[in-house]
Length: 401
Image (tube, rainbow, N blue to C red; front, side, top):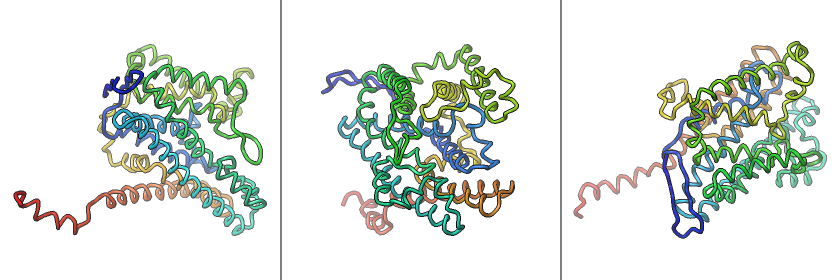
């Protein structure tokens, strides 16, 4: 990794370990997996979502998405802060938050229109209640305003508001991490503990609080940044130790058993109530400590067993997943939209096993097609015009002119 140390024109020494320059395909791979899993998990009563990680441990695709977002934001904008200055890096972070906000607002409008249309098309007003958009139909002006300030969120649209909120405050966090990496992580952890203890959360409209408590979930985001800026490299001896291998493996096995106990009542009834109740239901809103620990163990295992240079990234079977990870925002938004369509198909058309498989595969195929199109479109936008290339050719052929 790059070691960057600077004292010039800064009141405090900056000492950061940045990952190597270039794209880390591990991030794209797991971000693609997260997008596919979020789509499948958003389809209720779907046998295919049994393949996602939420059924086999405490953490799930949302944890992975937030962690990678923190890792990527730190890697990209920390380098920018160090090379071009803190102000430029901070403003670029705010710009990215604005881009995500615009995408969220567009998805918000399309999402409500989609559910309203489907509810009328199939004469099923319960869809509006099921996806928490009935209030919009009754009071559109107020609900729209609350949606614009991120207080109102239809079902399955909670991740992007969390991402936006975390990105808006991240310039200050990243500034601190570049100077006191471990201390900043410790402060983030204290905020996490305080939020859980005192019940801090943001209010939601028309009632309740945010499904993803930002005061708790910020720790996973900051942990991703800590991982990117040297935390992983500083912990590598522990990650590669035999003790971690056995302890981490034992905890993953324990998480598997407890999660399956929540899925199968027979297994849950065979456990002591105090043990079962400690982990079921899984506290996702406030990011339960056992959930954090589960994800940390998984992240350390990936660091230990999946190198950045693994040749498997080039396998054809991996390319669709990686491509969806590289075009993550567009793929995520499309997945949220398609999950509603898939759910309505299963409810109004057929809920058979084969239909569950069909809507799952079709949705993932459409998300993948979009990812390939966006990748191609961006390359076309960056390519020089043919006329411009032709006009430059004579000058290039005779540099003396």
